[in-house]
Amino acid sequence: MAGDNARGNGARAGSAANSSAGASSSDVTPVSAHVVRALEAVLLVAVEPVSVTLLAQLLEQPTDVVEGVCQRLAEAYAEAGHGFQLVEVAGGWRYQTHPDVAAYVERFLLDGQQARVSSAALETLAIIAYKQPISRQQVAAIRGVDPEAVMRTLQARGYITEVSRDEGPGQAVLFGTTSLFLEKLGINSLDDLPSISDFVPDARVVEALEQGLRVTPTEAAAPRDNGAAASGT
Image (cartoon, rainbow, N blue to C red; front, top):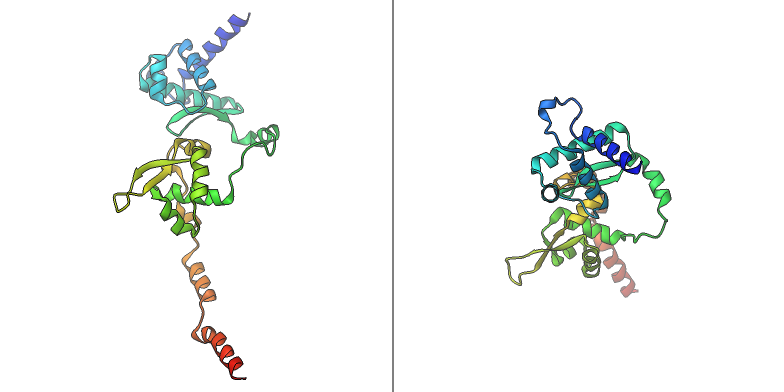
């Protein structure tokens, strides 16, 4: 009975992979149900996103065929309304929970059991993500504090890594983000990061802030005048 159910599920998976919404049968390369089931099994146990190249080697199939199977499976899962998705992130494919059931997943996960990233680490990670490759000294110049301890933590967690060395004097180590960083954000490449301009205040706001914080010569001289008056009494 269990074997019959497995074969039946495999047949349905193969049917889903061999068809896609709006695609004609001539656009689809037939793939056996066994290959589709094997692909699903590999992705199910994978800790990190699996590249199409590796999947093609494991399944002994052309890369374009494997890519097509992944895309059609992703569409089939979406149409069926499952609580999980097959998505392409960080240069590979993986299963992940659907965003609209995130609240239930959060309830399941024990609050406080996950190591949280500090605000300082998030600021440093954002700088590296948008300015990479970047040296530790350059990060310090932007943040105004020594980021060495924070960057060690980010590197230990696998979010950043040494990518090259500066060609200038001293050949400072340059850092960049890793595929784990992309995976955690659920994006496929750095091009998918939101534009930094979305977080920059409007020019009029910046001008208003500068006007409000600007010190006039009279205001700057006031403390000195008070000091002079005090010394003369």
